[in-house]
Image (cartoon, rainbow, N blue to C red; front, top):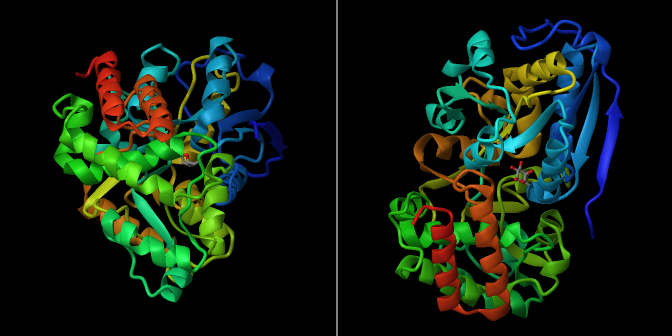
Length: 424
Ligand code: GAL
């Protein structure tokens, strides 16, 4: 299955206050009529509903602007990011695009001068006080803020089908050893132990980043990105060994499935469990499953007390064709109302600290609690920990590892990827 780019024009109703736009040139917007092109990769269940709810909020407050939904299918942004690179290279930016906070934002876009800083907008809207300081840190470079955060997602979650586990008399696994021990009982009842949708390879990287966190602990995991943890060392080796031990328990059709198709196998009870970021909560809810009743969750085995974080943000590209409208979009993204429209459906928690917590369901309540009390560490796969070139190199090592299962070759290659990234 290849990616399809879908451009859906959505008519807008609503009204809103115009915003300050320091870099607009006179007449710029007059020629461009009233539309705004929003670029993202949200097409799966939960993602779609969240995006539509945010559009609806924007409509209510901006009657005069038509949204062009430039959405490119492919979980994790795998296709969207390459299409975006092409467009940006051709000086054809959308008015605003989805980008992960942290290294992806800075190395892909800020460093090359592709974005306008939005510090002035944070000041105008009073946003410096409403976002967690750790999140703001991921948006700063050279004293400026570069994107508006919409949400916070957690990458290290294990989802399981409660009925399947109950039928096999199993308790939810707290370690990968528990999973290995539970597997025969699941297999005897005809259930695939672990769902995976690796049509796009990021899902394996995402699983592996939770194994790294489990084996290295918080300080060791952080050291992978700062250069103080050895990629050729014992912790990374153990993570590779665990992955090798678990791969035989994975859905044999994994290479043909997207992340949401794999989640559906957990929903159906064809598979027992999967590691996936909490956009899976949005997916399960969109399929009318009840979190806590049908689907259970735990921190990914061995990672309790740590929250592997990522944040989806929206940016202001230089040369945005409808810059004033893009600013209005950013205001919607950063508002309490926008965040509370989007996040309860998306599976994420609001980036703002003053959002309405009563709107969030049972899973999100635990994510809100854990985000406040856990150690926060950055997700590799979703742009927070490493520049995309380094993350892609790690992904390539893991793809090779799935075929060869050679732990020492993989740890050597991971060490080399770190050196190439200039961090080791
Ligand atoms: C992540 C993104 C999430 C979710 C996920 C699956 O990269 O941050 O919002 O959409 O991909 O598509």
